[in-house]
Length: 395
Image 1: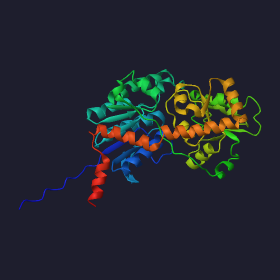
Image 2: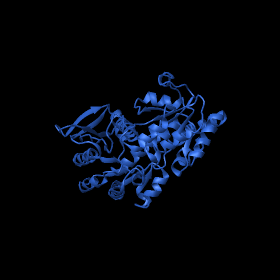
Image 3: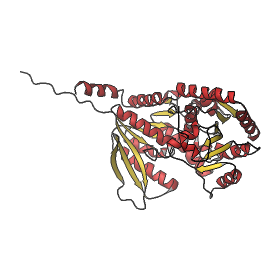
Image 4: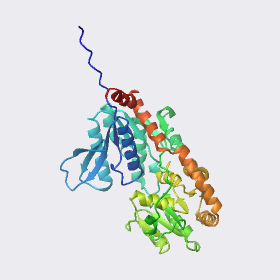
C-alpha cells in the first residue's frame, strides 16, 4: 500500500506597502489608496503589510505590529519631526521590509535612495512615481535637487514604475523604457447622495457655494481662486476653501488676507462624510492644480458629479475632459465663475459628463485589479484568486 502524497499548501502572495503615513487613512490621497488596496488584496487572499509612522519623543519599540481588518499594520517609531522624520521613517521601513517576504509597493519617490538596500536584498519593487515634485515652485534649490535625484534613483532601482496619468508616463519615459512603465489612474467611489445637515452646520446651502479642496500652495492657485471670486459681488454665492493654514508661511498669510470675511476657510476637514457632502452639494468644484497627474481630489469631485472650473493644462484636461471649463489667469477664472453662476444648463451638462468620466476611467475595482496584476507579475505570475478558490473547495 503506497502512502498518500501530502497535500500541497498554497502560499499566500505577499505585499508590503511603503511610503505613506499609514492606515486607517486620515491624511491624503496616498493613504486612502493604500487603505483601499490593502483591503482589496486582503479580501482576495493576499498577506498584506502596511507601514505606519508614529512620531515619539524617544524611541521605545522601533517596530511593532497589529492586525486591522486582516491587514498587518507595521508601526515604526521615529523620534524626530518634519522632513527628517519622514526620511528616518522611510529608512526604517526599508530596513524592516528587506527582512520580510513579498513584493514592495512604494508610494512616492522622495526617499528612493533607500531602495538601494531593497535591491541589494533582492526584493521586488514597484514604485508609484507620483507627480513631478521637483518642478513645484515652493521648493528651494536644495530640495529640488534632492527630489530630482531621487526621481532618477527611484526610476532605475524599481523593477516597475506606475504613472497615474499619461503625461506622467511620458515624463518617466525619459528615464526608463516605456516597457517598464504602467499607467494606472486613481480611483473614486460614486457619490449619489449626501445629507444636507453636514453643510448646513457650516452655514451653507446646497447649490449656493463653490468649493476648493487642496493643499494651500502656489502651484494649486489658491490665491488666484480667491482673488477671482472676490473680483465682483457674487450675491448669495459663497466660496469655501478647505486646507490647512499656517500663518508662519507667507503664502498662507496672503491667502488668509485675500479671503477676508467673504471666503469661508474652515481649515482641513478629515471627516469623509462632511467632505463628500461639501462636494455633492456644491455648485461647482474649483481646481487650480498645475503640477501633478491624476489628482485624487479632482477624481473624487468627478465621482460626486461636480462640474469643475479647472486650470487649463494637460493634467486636468485629461482627467476632467468635458466635465470642466478651463482658465489660464485671474481674468479668465472670474469669467468662468460668471458662467457657472449664470448657466444652469452648463452646470447640469458638466455634472453628467463628470459622472460618465468617473465611471469610465476611475473605478476603484479597475484601479485595484490593475495593481494586483502588477504585483503578481513581480511575484512570478502566481494568482491569489485560485488559492482562495482552492481553500473554498476543500473547506
